[in-house]
Image 1 (cartoon, rainbow, N blue to C red):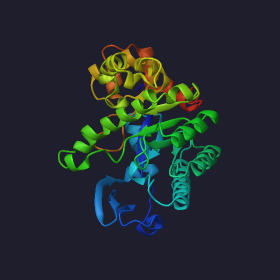
Image 2: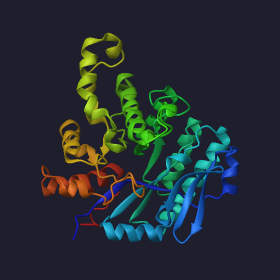
Image 3: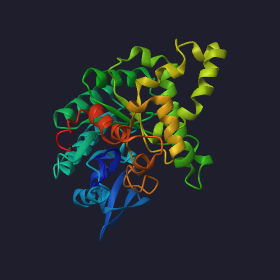
Image 4: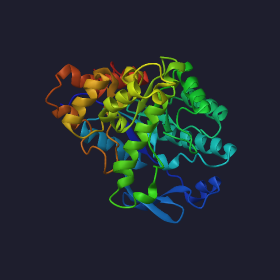
Length: 339
């Protein structure tokens, strides 16, 4: 029997029709095309964005996959194309509420094993705070946000205000990269995913560190970055060196960037034992949670396999990464359910 495991990085796309997405008033609005027989596509207006399978929207298929992989719990978050931060604020608030209610419906099929993270209309921070609090009251265990909003990094004062609200009301935050920089230079080979997304996540983390935002935010903020924190761990020594040598880098950041590595969490989606070892050395074993990027093809095919196979972890440490860290981060109280 496989060890208990919580997958914190798994996506869903609710059955949003093209008529539903018309509320966004955009020719590129995202919607789901169900082709039948377990196949479909995420659509962006008239264009096919990505072929997908039924587990993305069908909780019964998803639970069957979880049984096959031995996944105890999935914390599910909407596919990032659904963020829709650019639409008019009142519409954004309606859209977020719709996505959150559909997530609740999906997870109601098995509310112990499927736990939703909410959507937030970050183009209007007051509305975003109201919606994530409403979602929490309805059973959402955290909020899923993009790493930037309308050209603003996470150190933007309004986005910091949102993070402060999440800290005050004990709402965990999961940050996912999207709308990557320089798309015109990354048109082939999935470079937007292979280069753009890790760079976007690195940028998001450094924006909070170097701006001094972590100094202003409560230490109780629980914030996790997808894909192993992108390039952060590999470049941390370079950033520390720059902080020591250039006052324009240290101007708003009173302590070395490495000091803030215990202010956030990352997932384990790094796909190699050497990379996972580096993450544990720099972040600590209690700052990493299993995440697979299910059900997309660039994710971990067998969720948790990297941690299972790791040559430097003992059984207790594996349990931390596979289950206990996520249980504590999201406040799932799942120890008794999956002892």
